[in-house]
Structures are given as C-alpha cells and as structure tokens.
Amino acid sequence: MTPLAALEAFLHAPGRVVDVRRTGVGRSRQNWLFDLRHDDGSREPLILRSDPDGGLVETDRALEFALLGALVDADLPTPPPHSLDADGTAFGSPSLMMGRLPGTCDYRVLTGDRPEAERVAIAVALCELLARVHATDWKALGLGELFTDPGEQAARHELDRWEGILRRDRLAAHPELELALVALRERAPRSRRTVLVHADFKPGNVLLRGVEITALLDWELAHLGDPLEDLGWVTQPLRAGEHAIPGRWEAADLIGHYEEVTGEPVDREALRWWVTFSTFKTAVMQVSGLRAFLEGRSDEPYRPHRRVLGSLLDDVNRGF
Amino acid sequence: MRPTIDDQLGGADRLLDLVAADPGLGDGSRELLVNARRLLRTVRRSWDRVVPFAVADNARMAELLGEAAPPDVGKGPLERQEELRAALAAAIPDLDDGARAEIGRYLRERVEEDPA
Image (cartoon, rainbow over all chains, first blue to last red):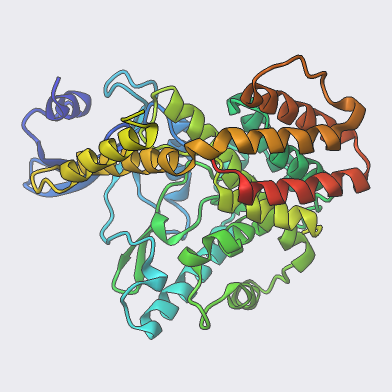
C-alpha cells in the first residue's frame, strides 16, 4: 500500500489527503507531512510520525499521544494530537498523527548566522519556555494518571530507569558506566518539588518563526520529576554548542534567568549531580544506539563516544 | 603483501568518495554514505593499534584487579580484554573509595588511548 493510500484508509478520507511528502531517511524516524482537505475547502496541516525499527531509546507512542492530549489545555506550544496507530496496524510501526505547527527547526540556532541580539532573545525565550513547562499544573491536567510521581526520590527513580536500559541493551561490559552508576547512586540528591519534565529540551525540538517559539516537540521522554533534570540536560558541557552563546549566554546566565523567572532557587550542588546524570544518560543512549545499529534496526552507527565517556569520568573522578 | 589491509580500506574509501561526488545522489543515500564513510575511516585509522592497545590494557586491568582477575587461560588479547573489562565492571560496586579512584583515573586515561 502506498503512503497516500495508507493515510487515506486510516483517516477514512479518500481523495482528501493532499501534498504528501516525507522527511527523514533510511531507518530513522519517518515523518510524513500532508494536508487533510475538508469539505468546506479548508486544509488541516498534519504530520504523521512513525517509530523507527530501532533508535536511541524505545518510547511509548500511546503515552506520548495521551500526554499531548492533556497538554492541549496547558499554556504550552504543543502540537495537538490527531490520532494514533498504537500497534502499527495501519502504518507498519507505532505512529502518532498530530497537527503541524508553523515554524522551522534549527538545532544550532544559538550559534548560527543570526545577529547576536536575536540569538540571545531566542535563548531567553527557550529558558522561559522551560520555566513554563515546569510551571504546568500537572495535577490539574491529570498527568498523575499517566506518570508516576517519584516525589523526593526523582533522582534515584531516573537512575534506576537508565540503569535498566543499560542492562537491557549493553553488548559488553562498560566499567566506565558502572563506576558512574556507583558514584551517582551514592550522591543522589532529594528532589524539592515534582514538575513536568520534558527530558529532551533543546533548540532541535522547537520550531521558530522569527524569534518566536511556535512549537515544543518530541515529548516522548517526558515524565514527572525534578526540574533540575531538565536544567542539568541543558547546562551539561557536552551540549553547550546547542544551548550556549559563548561569552553572552552561558550556563550560569541560563540558571540565573531561570531563577529570576520562576522565583525558585537552583541548588547548585544538586544540579551538578543532574549534569553528570545527563552525561550518563547520553552514554546509555549511545549503548542502545549501538545495539540497534548492529542488529540492523538503525542506520546510525552510534557508540559510546570518547568525548561523552571522558566528560563522564572527569565528573566522577572529581566527585562531580 | 599487496594489497595490504590499509590499501584495501583506502581503496574502499576512495570509491565512496567517488559516490559522494555524484550530484544525482539523493539526500537519503547521501546521509547513509556519510555514516558508512565515518565507520570505514574509524577502522582505517585504528585497526593496526587495536591489538597492541589490548595487550597493554589487559596488563593494567589485571594489575588493578589483583586476585580478582580471572585466570589467564591463553585467550587472544581481544577476548581477554572483554573478560577483564567484565571483571572490572563486576568488581567496582564492592571496592573502597581508594580503589575506585585508581580505576577511575585509569579508565579516564584509557578513553584517550583506546584506538577503537
């Protein structure tokens, strides 16, 4: 069945799916962009995201669909969910159909060609959007029914989750990661508050129109947890090329502005734990990616990278 | 003897260069080609240093493990390396801070030296 036919059959809309095109290549996630033409002539821009056979992490498309449904009532620029093929019956692999929001994605926007003032404005907007994610009233939106609230044990909860992924996906022993696990477990901080955590917040997961953020995408790793988890992710040195503007918007600026906007002080010692955890998580993602590649489920030749392992061991050896 | 392993890896790399120069290549194929070339170049850069590194790595890991090192029953250096890395990983949770720190320092050095 052609993609067009599959879309028309799934939507019960013969002749009404137009301008179908694909983004993404090989076995990476398939994104189909198209419009649904309604009887009154109007068009509804949609996107279908289908899971790859293998990737960095396995996530639950039905859970992401439910989360996006709940977030429709939140003050966040999230794509409205349209429909779900949870088991891949229609499209061959689990797939999520969403409204297609305007804007373009540029994961290096903060270090790109735009004028510095514009890049700083975008960096500030990203920081404030993260604060809005954390301010989401997750209880009122019913997210407590989708996710476990780990309470003050959020750090241990996430460490357990990623240790489990490491044990499941590793193809060989990784003493570097075992050493990090022991150190992280010994010093796991207690969480002060539970918030909605995006867990992969980065310029590559937003859409921009000018300096306006029109969409925050890729909620597949989202969960309830410690806000420092997202702050650790965006301030980890490995990702400075995505989140910082050298000399103008560094990790300290981001943290300072976050504190100003939220009124919540950031515990720097606990944040260092979350930064190290972020590096550990990146390494585990690469372990999973290596397995997927060697099993022929992915076309991306991931491996635990020298830079990631070096950064992780530097943190561990100096006690974070 | 020619072609050497380097000759052959270099030849494959050159052929992929020719494919990459094809203006008719689609975006998808080009992305796959980038990944293939990256893998090939990693192997070309490192293959002849992998075994000497494993021999030195094994000696250092056996030293760090002491009596906890599995007996050397004459396995090849790469198989022995896997065995010692597994033993090191298994030993880490039960070691005291000093021993873990020593292992941490070695693993950090090792990250820079590992040709693979």
